Length: 358
Image: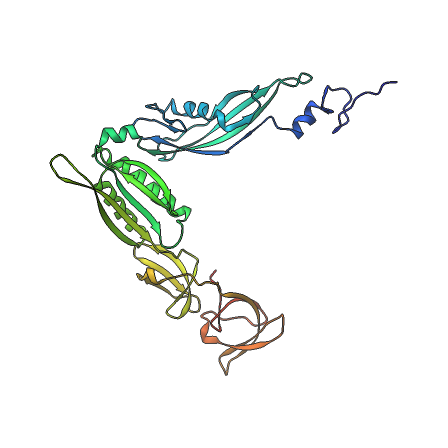
């Protein structure tokens, strides 16, 4: 007497099997396709619509053509069997007013290799972000001279993502507005370099305007350097120009030592670094940003119980609940009253206790 074959996962005896699994269970346990990258970033030319693919710049395209060209170029981002059929299912709307438009491509992948099963299909989504700039062809059309570089850096650290986003938004906005008046006022490329960004502008006017915009956001150090690159036919010297703008190494919420007291960085702005002293909660703006460094290692965070309040001595008695050791704290060191019978987290630094900033 022969036994009926059954699915090794769900026990179904009525459905066709492959490798001892029915179609439903097989595709729950196996995937037909996957993506090498779920998010892809591509440069595109704001002037002619050319897209920079692995093979190079595509040449001029309209806004209507760009999504489909990118969709087909990203077929190689899909990992699947050679016998699978890849189709573009849908492309989401694109907001072209955004300097870095984003959209989603949905692919449908079909395969009929398993004879005992019906054709199987899956859908995958790829996020696309395209960065506006200028292609090499348009650069050559616009100017025969070398581009102007602006190096945007932070002292002794990498730029934060918020700083990168702010600077690139300013650069794209300038290129879009100034290019109307001057065709040389373009942004051709942005390259991440040494933890910062290198912006390549078409002329010195847009580069210096960009520097001024950065100064209006963050205090920092500015340099302008010239390098002789050649002499033209009339023996006129041709220089390349590089601007450098370096912002402070400290960032908001970091703890620093300032005027021999423990302080927290509130913000870094065009006027300086705004800090708050932890013991008095008073704030101070300083322009001496290059002297500020984060405390390393960070102050020890300890938990203490306020046992009592000594009005005569103007102090608090605090206790460590781990070893029950007690010590006196001067009340004048805290701007807010500490409640007795309540535990507090303190920063202990240089034998003093500070309440952490909220």
